[in-house]
Amino acid sequence: MIRVGIIGFGYWGPQIARNFQAADECRLAAICDNNPATHARISRAYPNVHMTCDSREIVISRDIDAVAVITPVWTHFELAKAALENGKHVFVEKPFTATVAQAEELIDLADRKNLQIMVDHTFLFTGAVKKIRELIDCGALGKLYYYDSTRINLGLFQHDVNVIWDLAPHDLSIMDHLIQSKPACMLATGQSHLNGHHDVAYITVYFDDNLIAHFNVNWLSPVKVRTTLLGGEKKMVVWNDLEADEKIKIYDKGVEIKSGQGVYDLLVSYRSGDMWAPKVEQTEALSNEVRYFINCIKKNEAPFNDGLAGLRVVKLLEAADRSLADGGAAVRI
Ligand SMILES: NC(=O)c1ccc[n+]([C@@H]2O[C@H](COP(=O)([O-])OP(=O)(O)OC[C@H]3O[C@@H](n4cnc5c(N)ncnc54)[C@H](O)[C@@H]3O)[C@@H](O)[C@H]2O)c1
Image 1 (spheres, protein in one colour):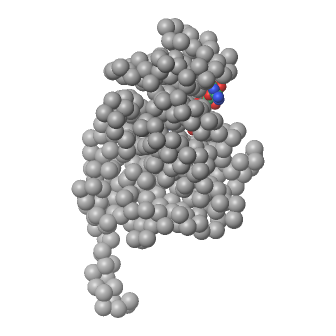
Image 2 (cartoon, helix red, strand yellow):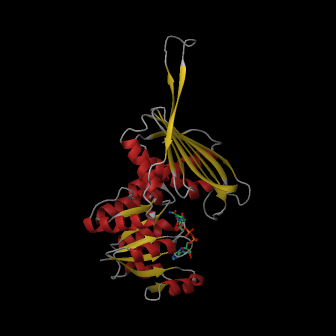
């Protein structure tokens, strides 16, 4: 039985608590939030779970094996470090840390203590991402040309981070999981309109093999859009995460150049075949993820969304900030 303590019961903490509470071979042992206004909610939802204001109580407790850090990003490092130093496995929200140096320090500490770090890259546990990964791995899409995602909505404005650090960790972690080649360089442009943080941003990532990725993240959109396109040589995928069914559509569409004799002899032919929507697993992603976390601890195995996966995303976020500060200049990764 793995005993879990949760730190942070704001917007996202209750989702994590519910899933740990429901997972087999796991016991939700304690919940901490340093804002007393959350305490009525905690005790109403979990009357038999120990509640505290003081994160120290959670990280030093002998009755806790793993700590979930569900607090704003600028607090992740100190809380996760204290938990690891006290021999606890950690489940840390995205983005893993506020800097690359912090991520590296936590990874090193966990290695020395033989403890697991899991970074909550929730989308990697969705049926949609699993299906797209299957399609890429079996070669159904062919060589990838581009990855293009739009994640826009009205708010929720964050006080401590810009829209890239808030929304893009989802897309960057999905890209990192789906695409095996490494990004070569990236650039980011954006604008801030209201609270001094960029609230509209566009990120472009270049790979060495002609693959290009683009991300549009925006807190000022009147409508919510969650759409990702992957263009391959053989097939193309449209993933609309807001669709209840048929989230993924695969298009047998493409372009072929028939003749290479000379620039004026090129014959461009367009293939426009069937479209189909494969069945996608519907289990709640967080439920899959927390069960996987418990299993990794029991088997003493590093999860695929470990500290290194979190670090790769933080490296891209830091590079995006450097590019933003330099007027959209390309930054090598
Ligand atoms: N994976 C996802 O899909 C997803 C979705 C939303 C948020 N998140 C992430 O979850 C984290 C929290 O986001 P949120 O929207 O729930 O924020 P929030 O501000 O709503 O909640 C954070 C809570 O943590 C508490 N807290 C802060 N510092 C603390 C400390 N030192 N000790 C104890 N309690 C402390 C606050 O009082 C607050 O109740 C962020 O890293 C965010 O990026 C992830």
